[in-house]
Every structure is written in C-alpha cells, then in structure tokens.
Length: 634
Ligand code: ADP
View 1 (tube, rainbow, N blue to C red):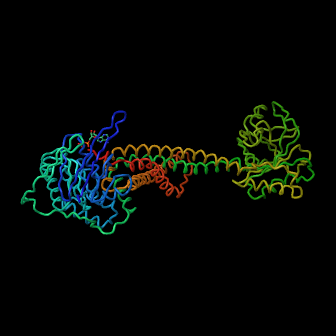
View 2: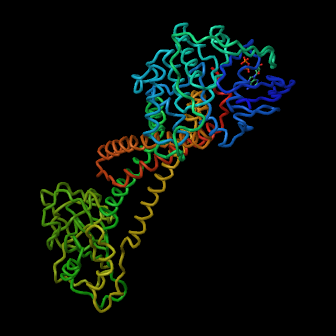
C-alpha cells in the first residue's frame, strides 16, 4: 500500500464569468514511504495546487487522496488540522516563521497545537534545532537570522513533530547557492531518517537531490522518472532523525489556555508599534471614560457644594392672618436662633407707608423694622456700616443705595441722619447688594426697639440662614419654635425639594457624562475593529502557517481574541493614567476638589479588556476562516 495515493485528482478554480480554470486534471500518483520526490514543471502548471492537496490545505474538486491508507480531506473540521499537526511538516519558500520572536517559538508551534506539554515541547524543540545545526539559536530572534538559518529553523519546525511527510514549496527559492546546499543537505538527512519528502521546485539542483522527479505540465503528470539508487556518498552518511510512524510524545491533551495566552502575549510583544497604536485607541476611550466618571464625581461634588452654599440655606417663616399669638419682637430672633442648624436669624417687620426725609428730599416708602443679624440672614452687602455684628441698634438705619441716591445722602461714614415720620434715625450703612430681598436697595431698614409694638404691622417674617444641608430640618422646626401652640399659623418658605433638585442636577450631569463615555467607547471599538482587520492583512501568511502546522479555526480565533484582549488591557491601564491626569488638570484649573475613586482601576482594566476583545472579534472570525492554501503563497 503506497504511503500517498492520489486517484484521478482534479482541481478547478471558478474564475468569475469565464470558464473554470483547471489547475489539475485527473492526476493519479502513488508515493511510497521514504521517497524523495521533486515536482517540477513550468509556472502555472499546478505544482503548488498539488502540494496544497497533499498537505490537506486544499481539497480536490474531484478524485481521491489517501494518506497512510486513509482517505483524507482538508474540509473545515479539526481532523485535517490534527493530521497536519501529527503527520505533515511544511517548508515554505517564504519561511513563514514568527518574526521578532525567538527561533524556538516557531519550532514548537506544531507541538503546541498538538497539545503537547511545555517541557516535552522544549526538549523536542532543542533537539530539532540541534539536528539542523542551530543548537545555539534557540532564544535568538528570528529577525536576526540569515535566510539559510531561517529555512533551517523552518525545517526544524517540520521535523520537531516527527512528521512522516515533509512538503516543501521552493524551499531554496529565497536562498543563495551555499545556503541552498545546506538546506538540501538537511532535507536529504531527514529523508534518510525515513521521512517522505515532496518538494516543489524550479531548481535543477534541488531536483538532482530527489530520487524521483514528477513533471507536471498544464495540470497533468507529464513524466515520472525514478533514479536508480546510488551508493551513498561519504559526507552524507550520518543517519537523519528517525521519522516515527506513531507519535513520539505519548498522551496528547487539548491545547491549554495558558499556551494560547503565552503565545498571544509573545505575539503582542513582537509587534510593539502595532500594539501601541491599537492600545492607544483603547486608551483614548478609557481615558475619556475615567475623565468623565472622575470629572462628573468632582463636578457633582462641586454642584452639591455650590447648591448647599447658596439656595439650600435660606428659610423663612411668615405670620399669616391672625397676629394674636405673636411673640414680642425681642423674642423672635432668640427663638429662631435656638433652632438647631440656624446660623443667622433676623426678624423683619413691615410697617405701613411712611415719609422718609433727608435734609434735601423726602419720599413715601414702606420701611422694615428689623432685629437680629439682618446682614447675614438677608445676605446683605452694606457699605460703610457702623458695625454691630450685622445688627441694627434702635434708632439706626440701613438705607438701600438706590433710595440713598434719591434722598441725596452721601457718605455713611459722616453718619448722616434721616427722619421717618418725623422720628430721627442715624444712617449706619448703605445697602449695596441684597441677594435675598432684592427690593431692599430701594427701601430702608430700621433698628427696632425691643419693646416696639408690632401688632399693627402689615407683615412679620423670621428670616433664617441655615448651615449647609440643614434647611429641610430647620424648615420643620422653625414654626414650632415661633409658635409652639399654632405652628400652622406660620407660612414657611424653604427650598422644599432641595435634595430632589440636587439629585436631578447630579443625575443630569451624570447622564450627560455617561452618554459621552458610551460614544467614546463605541468609537474605540470601531477604531479597533478597523485596526485589527488591517493588521490581519499583514499576518495572512502567519495565520496560514499556523493552520498548516495544525492550528484549528478555534485556536486562531482564540489567539487573535487574546491578543486584542491584551492590547485592550494595556490600553485600559494607559487610559487610566491619562484620564487621571486629565482629571487633575481640569480640577486644578477649576479649583475643584478632585475625586478619585479606587474602583476606576479595575473598571478601566475590565473596560479595556472588553473593548479590546470585542474590537478584535471580527478580525478573530476573519482569521479563523482564512484558507491556508491561499495565504501561504510567497
Ligand atoms: P505552479 O505552482 O505550477 O506555478 P499553481 O498550482 O500555483 O501552479 O497554479 C496552477 C493554476 O491555477 C495557475 O493558472 C494559477 O493561476 C491557478 N490558481 C492557483 N491558485 C488559484 C486560486 N486560489 N484561484 C484561482 N486560480 C488559482
């Protein structure tokens, strides 16, 4: 039974509109174990097509291929991948090694895809490199090796798995004659060890080494000549590595995740430029995410602080209707001040219209009688105040700047006086700003004597400024403090839904930032999809080689996904740092307190990983589907 048996094998390629192209037409060929066969013939004759079929990289359109007594097909499943991994070694014109990675990585690839453990792989790899005369190149980067050395590494890869069939496509095509001779010596040596060798070549030197030459012209076997065996010449007498008929590695297991991850990490590291570019896409998105999350936390803190500092602190209680239960004016402020959370309190009593007169003018105005710290409670800015802790003494007045101008009152420092319905008041200060009661700038505040009868007032209000966040509680307590028996007789004004409003503003800030971040992440995934697909283009040969040495579709998909995940994690960490710097820059320039949440670290890494893996998913699927035959051509 021949080792290789092709029966009536044809292969045609559909060429769009035109008639199909017949690359092979009814080829029948038997090759025995241990033969060294050269396939020669003019370009385009179908040599590579034949080799692809022999290597289970391609299926015939019709006809049958039996290897080692079994009918085999390339198909799509894992069976062909396993057959390739265990029985077939490939040597390509373009070497197809893992560039910028140690020579050993390329050699052990086939063993890895067979699921052989790391230690056994290492031993076999070292032996294989030694057998091709490169024992000291195990750790040397492939990109620093000469062409001849590269091809010997490729041969080491083919023999490391104890392949019984070595398929070589123009193995010396890229080599000078000296290096070509070394490579041919290797092939001969392996052949003497028992391996079957089929080599496609244009080179007479290569063909001369073979024991049989099959000439393919126009898709058919034209001639098939076997040379009578010569006496082995002395220099090439040493025995080659024994080609095993069964596996030399004992029990095989499934390819381990750790091996895929290690391989992916080495792959990512071997392309620093590309890795950096792709990681940068992720980093930008993660940086935006970190910055928006961090800034929204800082901004929310800022909103809350601003909110508490202003709106949320103003509470007032006004007596409405029945003024029978009114406390004396002197008691309103002490009672309000006793409420927990009150920082400043004042009583404001609106009197009926009165005539205010200065030396030169007079106006009809409604004055307010006040007690307590009116400056703080009403948030006044008073120029040139005759200062009593923000309070007015009896017979003193604060006059609004607009009214002061009307009445032609100049400087408060000269202690001018006014009369209110004929009673004299000293102007202790001029109100230039009144944020809480804006009308005050056209009005006048009068210091009330404690015993003043306020029963005829038109309106009485206790005005309170609370400490930050205390407003709701003060609003509940204030009417009780003012009138324990009839608290309902007071109308309380407070920013009633302050917490709710704050929550809404915070929610709004958060939602905007989140939307922004989502857009950034989507853009990053899109950029990465693009980048990984582009990168895949330059790796078609490598993917084809990985499949040729036994990788299954799932292995390739896992590799590309793991690589993208690594890139994503790198981007995530980079983005975290960039984002934190952005937060610092913004918060420092805005005089905000920066908020860093520790959870950003795992979140950044996780988001980077997810963005990376999903950005690489499409490339992973494409890579898994690549047909090796079409991607291994030089
Ligand atoms: P050789 O190796 O002898 O130069 P090939 O086997 O590469 O020849 O090609 C045989 C014929 O098949 C050529 O005409 C080539 O253009 C064609 N061919 C090879 N591969 C493909 C393909 N994937 N699609 C279409 N035509 C192909």
